[in-house]
Length: 253
Image (cartoon, rainbow, N blue to C red; front, side, top):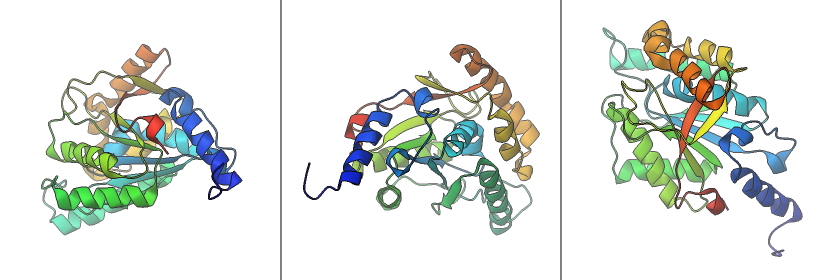
């Protein structure tokens, strides 16, 4: 054991390596008994309602198991309410996001980009990298890059670029939103059973009153949860694509 590594740090690192090499379905079922087994989970989304739509059940499950979970919204949804100014819309959607995260029992942050005008450049890659360096996540969920919405693409690309630059590597999983309409060509590698979290997810999603939550849920989400559940052999599930490469679990330390 390195003299600079305490016994507590050693066991924490060993536990995280072990956990991070498990399938996502097993990780989501793992209860954090103490600090040595607690995972830091981050979910990145383009707008308020994206993380809730794509993996709200999974986030609720990780939180309920005692892990630290935080949602990072790229924007405040400034362009998402017809007839409202950017500032008015941002204020409304920020409150909706806060309410949704409270139901999921997760923390939240905003990166500071503008809805409909997101950018992937060195400035924002640096900001995302700094965020990840400060948070030191073990698992990061982000949007699938092949998507019809530019803000969703930006969330995905910034996350991947940050993953390549952070000293402490993390495992990335992509999630889907409005599959077939926004998320395209999504072929899952992992599933998380959200049968017990489905109602919590629905309540969180319905906090986004300004976004027509009934319409959002009808935008394939309820049907997709059932369909992914059928694929996984459970009543309801969320699906993910695991990114392999430099961000693999073996690089977590």
